[in-house]
Image (tube, rainbow, N blue to C red; front, side, top):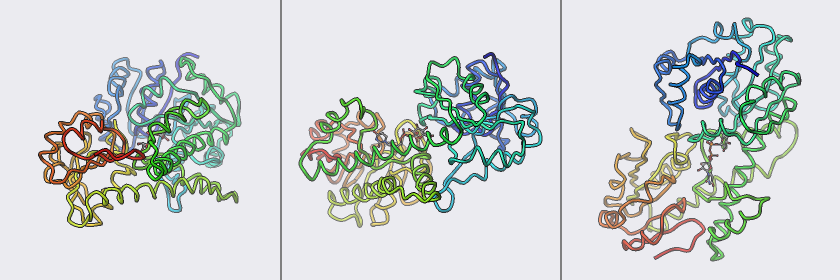
Length: 427
Ligand code: UGA
């Protein structure tokens, strides 16, 4: 396929990555947002999200004249062959996905879409959304296609350009094949199917990952109680090709803008068709329990949390992003503060003020007078801290490493104690 005229609605990390990457594949892309300030910044090549490679790709698209940014979707779609919906679908009341942003866009563009223009859902939408959009559009001449993204924050550009698979679903097979063709230059297998299956692939995959992590966190807890070492256990499991080595690292719980929202949404979707998805509900419960166990672990090292000074390293939900949405680090720090601890936190990508803690711009400041130091996000720079200096600054000697990130030997060599997850305590 040659170049297609594409409109991308929504310029969050999904929309902007989709737009910039489709432009880099040779398509003519117009990105639309309701936020005029953001649009002006993007048109000037300014990208405000931390996403490696994205700013360069936007600059290249702008320079090549293949990428433009505008406000107002009604006009933008008038000449389009494909419209990608990349607007937020947050968790609504009751755990289901809130589709108001999608509905508002459909309402706005329904009358101006040219005949045959494909309307494509990119953000995660519940099963049945393609059908609902078709009904809302009232345009039998416009195919509706589900084409979920599998981008991870922090590696979104690389994930887009080097995907494991392309999934496209529509009840109009020719439309699905045409959309799959937009990615023809990428070396990835494509699954072309009906709309409901494509929509479900996304949830089934994200929820599987969440369950895998809850399972690993539970196994780490068992390791502690049984005197086993999670590093060896997951290494031994990971060699089994049916299990695989990735997503086997225990942590303070899974978070971010996707896994928590999608797990709740799938439980709710299941409920709506009379199925009690207790396996997935248990994974969600396990994720809450994990945060409680982390707080108890920290409390155990300082005696009582009331009045204790806790230094926190890392606030983002994972390394490589400044995203705090549903970050387990924030739940843990909030619980510490609620128990009366004085929390000082540092994250290389997060600044400003946050409730219940003092945010500092230097990791060593978190150690000053601290009774315990807690690693909550796996930023590489924490590995390279000068532990002798940290030990000098601290009041107590406990380092709680909820990501098993640090080299325990360097922590111990400084006269501190190290406590990881599912690993023997090192003194
Ligand atoms: C996730 C999926 O991985 C993407 O495939 C999907 O496209 C995206 O959601 C989405 O729905 O848009 P993301 O939210 O960026 O991507 O984050 P992940 O990299 O999946 O991490 C999720 C959580 O699991 C984080 O809190 C992370 O710290 C935790 N995690 C991950 C672990 O605790 N251990 C691991 O081994 C891996």
